[in-house]
Image 1 (tube, one colour):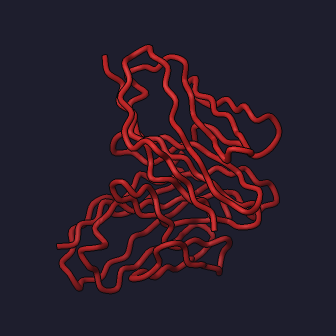
Image 2 (tube, one colour):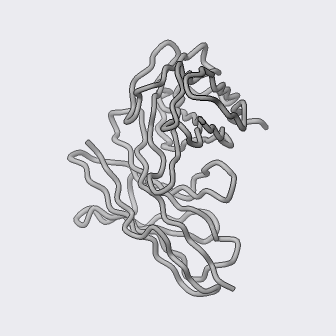
Length: 113
Length: 116
């Protein structure tokens, strides 16, 4: 079975500073990887995804993530955060042969003015 | 552009009462999902439907039933609500099953359920 670990439940960071949100997964087969963002009192929306090809994936709002197969990681990064980036971020994984997506517990990013 | 619509947005139940959460999508997606979100636990899959007429259990199906009424609609029913079912419920849909895997889930805005 697949599982997703997000080591940091809360990450405070000052505005304009860089940030990295960590994600590790476990799976015995090939996976697809995703980051979703949830703003307060809203549903989730896709930030970026890795399906195949280049291991460095760029998403919306200046975020990027790098797939590292040997370390089974898919960390999310942004070089300079803005107040509007304050949100909950979820890493997720799906297996190619199944029609379901498994989510990690989430990381709450708080950007401090 | 409605996307995924869930009703109701808020509901308070007493223990033992029943209710149905409704979900509809207008994107012609094959797959639909019900998740629950609890603090510190992320989203956990309750049930999913890969296509019209099929449903499968997810991680936490106990205490729930689902119906894929047609391609657009996927409902979640609590037959006898318990306080442990207090949560925020999200419906989602995706294109999977149409031969082009995009991996993207489209979410509704959520339904906040409180069971007293």
